[in-house]
Length: 238
Image 1 (cartoon, one colour):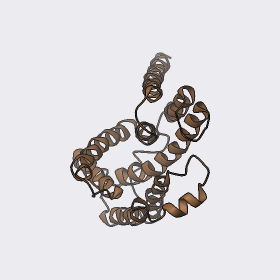
Image 2 (cartoon, helix red, strand yellow):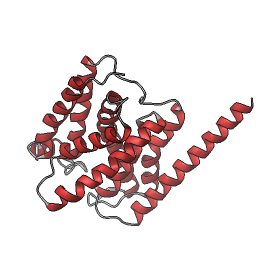
Image 3 (cartoon, helix red, strand yellow):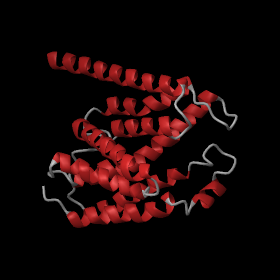
Image 4 (cartoon, one colour):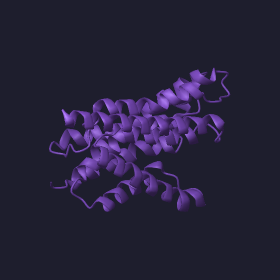
């Protein structure tokens, strides 16, 4: 399939253009005025998900013949939906500590649910559009390109960590999420993985609640995969 670089450029420039004022804090006051007295008050990063979602929709409006290898639900729809809700279920169970006076289980549910929507919006752009648009490109080069754009999209260049460590995190994450999307053909498991990263980094330090949540998600994911493998074997026998 021919790679349409002009539409890919449209996506990247739109995503970067919309992300810049958000990542630089220019809309923090606006967001905080809306989220005042809620647990979302310090989470203006959530608006950044809109940038990749809008960029993808704009690119799709022109790029009509983009590959559909990676879809939203994938071939195993039920399995991928269950994987998607794992972080919400896990962190509702173990809870998350917070300074808002909110019940830990309720906060775990709310924070996980909101970030599921955020991760979906972001990954719709990176996987549903950009990774599909690069189908046919060398796999490793594709992951590297998306990771590089992902790093720039954050507009974090102020510290040595931002310049030397954070790019490596984006590179590793880009390869992991890209391979996951290609292998499973759905953005939902990618959303789950991205959400798990957010849940363990954007709500304070690592504590027992977060470790327990991560373990529950991993065990749940393994259990779902095993159940689907057994179902697949049984269906093949019949």
